Image (tube, rainbow, N blue to C red; front, side, top):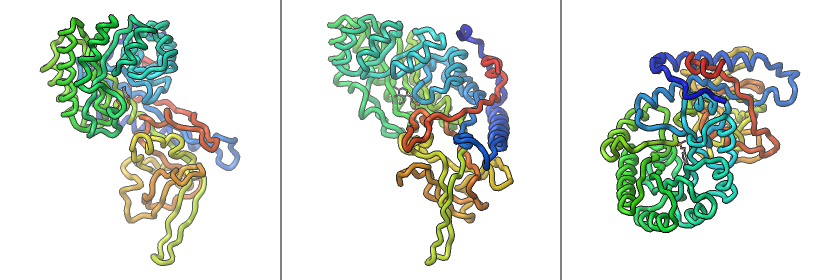
Length: 429
Ligand code: PLP
C-alpha cells in the first residue's frame, strides 16, 4: 500500500533544468532500446512501438500545480492515461483520482487509495457500477439530470452528490458540454428534486472542456457555480466543495490560466469551501514519448513536377497510439531517431521545420486510408525501411484509446526514466 501522504519537497530543480535533464534521459532510453534490437533476426513484436515515460515530468507538473493552484486539490483523471507507474506516483504524492467507470475505481482502490480520495465523475452512470461504488464506499459522484437522482436514490442514497453544470467550452480542444452539464435554468428543479428524495448534494462540478484555451471560461463557470451554491443554500443544502474539473494544458498557458482561476475562486468562494479539480492531460501529456519503426516505404515520382517524395508506413497509427489525432485533435510532430547506422536525438529539429528537405507522408500499419499520421513533413535525410521516428508529448489520450484493429496489439512497452530524484525516491527507482 502507498505510504501516507508523502511530504513534497518544493525546491525542485528549476523547471527548465528539469526539462533538459528529462530530454537527456529520454534520448538515452530511446537510443538504448532501439540499439538493442536485432532488426534482421528479432522475434515478432520486438520492433513494436514503445514509449519512454519520464516520471520526473509528472512530479514537476505536480509541484507546478501546487505552486500556482495551491487552494485546489487535484484529482487526476485516470481516463487520460491509466499508466500504473503514473498512478502510483500520484497516489504517493497524495493526489486524488477522478474515475469514470468501475474498472478505473477498482484500479485505484487496488493501489490502497482511500475511497474518500476518489470522485466518480460521470454524470450518467451504469447501474451496476453505482452498486459497486456503494459497496466500495466511493461516495463522491456527479449528476446532471433527474433520472440520475432517481437512480442514486434507489442504489446509493448516501452518496455525496455534485451537480455538474454546463459551461461555455467553445474555446476548448474537446467539447464536453454538448453531452454533459445542467443548464442554469434547470438547476433549481434538480436541487428541489434532490431535496424531495432526501439526497445529499454537497457541491457543484463543472468542466470547461478538455484542452481549454480561454481563461474567461473558468471565470464564468466559477460565477455560475456561485449562483448554484446560493440556490442550494436557499433550499437548505450545505454545499462544501466546488469541483473545477479538468481542461488545464501543461504548456506555458497554465500559469496565466491558474492565476485567473485562483483570483475568481477567491472572489466568489470563502476559504471554508473546499476546491478540487480533475486534471488529466496537464499531468501526463509531456511525460510520454513514443518511438515507431518504419516498416515499409513507397517512392512516389511525380513526372509532371519532376519531384520524388516518400510514403513511410509506421508500425503505429490512428487505430493505435495515434488515436489522439482522431479523438483528441492532436498533431503529433515527427522527429528522427535513427537513420541508417546513425542514431540521432535532436529535439530541435522536427519533420516540419526543414521545408527544403525531402518530403514524406507518414501512414499507420492498418488497411484503412484514414490511418495517416502526417500528410506532409520534411527531413533533410533519406529515411529508409528499418529506421525509427519518435514523437514527443504523447502521454494524454493516446494508448488509453488504442484499438486492436487489423490484429495489432493495443499494449506497448513503457520504458520508465526519472529526471527528478524526489519522484525516484517515492517510487523506489
Ligand atoms: N473530468 C471529466 C469529467 C472529463 O470528462 C475529463 C476529460 O474528458 C477530465 C476530467 C480530464 O480533462 P483534461 O484531460 O482536459 O484535464
